[in-house]
Image (cartoon, rainbow, N blue to C red):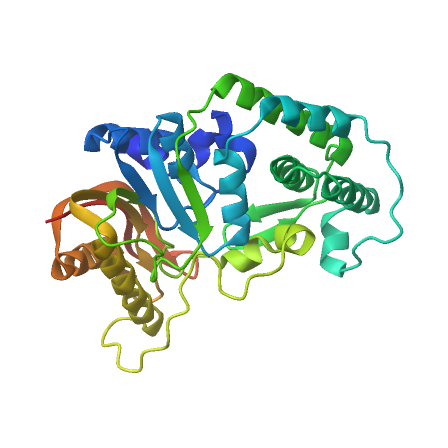
Length: 361
């Protein structure tokens, strides 16, 4: 259980080439995907789906094993990172653009962002660097090269900021950080090296923005599903990744990797937000049942909900719901447990993070 608890976090990806191009603490690891590719007996003739693909761990791990995959998410940032990590590159062309980028001579931009919170997160010089490099990257005619360098700049910018993500908050701590130019140069070289050494198989990898409640897939088209839906009452991703969106993307209209869910007036003994969450999860599971082939296996990583009055056992409720929809329940494996607390000190109950194994009958 201790090893599995580690694998359902993003931490092991710190040392995984390509997977570590962009840090995403809400994800799980390549090693987790590899484990279940093996346990499920996934072959190169199979198609694997991740309807909450995040930054593409499932998709990239499949590509590294020569397996076709499909991934969706509502976050433009996540979809962008997933595409950059899984697309096929003309290495000769990409190396040419990276070499050119390494020689760019800084020119002070006319304007930089003036939002107060950005001025707290970055030094004036860092913001000037970001604006300059963004403009230079935008002039590159090759879309794949532009995207590659943009992801390198996004990651470099965050590593050169005073901000750090702490649970549901972005905190600011003034400290010594590397200059963006130095970080950006290092990141480009390392990403290029990763691609040279990886020699990824040119297998189909489809990555698109889509709502998991309405998947743009045909009936009975998917062999396996590996995913982790948003956890009940967890962080609001729009706020956590506000910096990246402000500097590099348009802010999405929907809440990132979460469900809107209308408030339910008669929610019984369950918090209204939990009732709304399960209404949406039911739609997701119905969609997964529709798109999966008979015999398809699913591995779903899910965490419990922590409320002041009680712990909501999401894994058990989701498993029961899936059976009612038509899935065959195979197993529920507890990866790790944490205390749910009220007012930081009063223990409300034990909260599980589990892997639900299902099969379409």
